[in-house]
Length: 122
Image 1 (cartoon, one colour):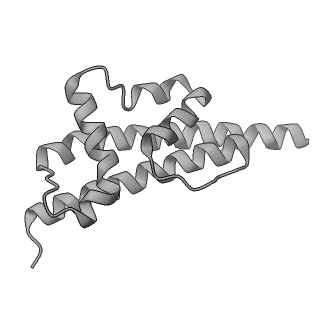
Image 2: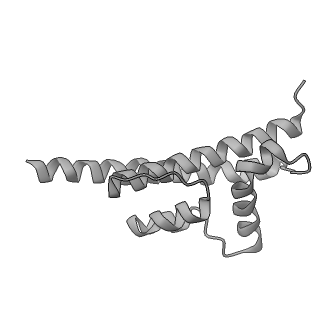
């Protein structure tokens, strides 16, 4: 039977995967390329140039913001393989709105970019 702690670990991994896929969508929409990368710092850094809003998702300007982003980055490996990796419900509750913001920004800027390709073709 899965414990609450296991559910939080899995949730952190799934939030990481969601972010990874949003960043992939942005990169693919803007560059038409998409090499695999799991490091959220690198993915985030490679996409920020496409929208100033992306800088607001994980600002890391406070120790708490840095801690949350570090936790999310670590979740890719640690949530699955590190028995000492800890994620609290409060962490998940703080990360969900950030991932939702990334989703919303991603949807908007990718649609805008795809529409620009359509307009160029006409």
